[in-house]
Image (cartoon, rainbow, N blue to C red):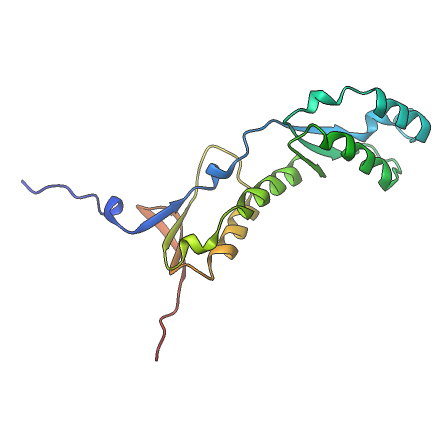
Length: 171
């Protein structure tokens, strides 16, 4: 009887799973509407007082997306003051919705990758998973790795979609 050989396990393919870069911290929104007088107007003195009295420690370690869910004119400095207070406790603060927050969290995580570690490697960027990975993270990782890898694929090692193969030097 012939031994069954797992060719995928024995190959030189390196699988990168973007889910491994998912920040586990809680994601929440901080809505400026909650700080507006009658949900429409920012009164500077009242706002500054409310910010001073607010318990910012509740945001400890959280990822916070600052939004304004109502149609109100809010000066830029008001968001900046909120961010200054949130930054003391939160892991990450962004201006935008939860989708924008996710993009920034992935951008931060991917910035820690040294593409040189994958020089001339055959890479499979794993698809399908259980965590929400924005498509932009796949594009960013592809853009980062393409200059250094010998090949880039998407999917699972047993069933990949070829994306890129480094041209051979003809000399």
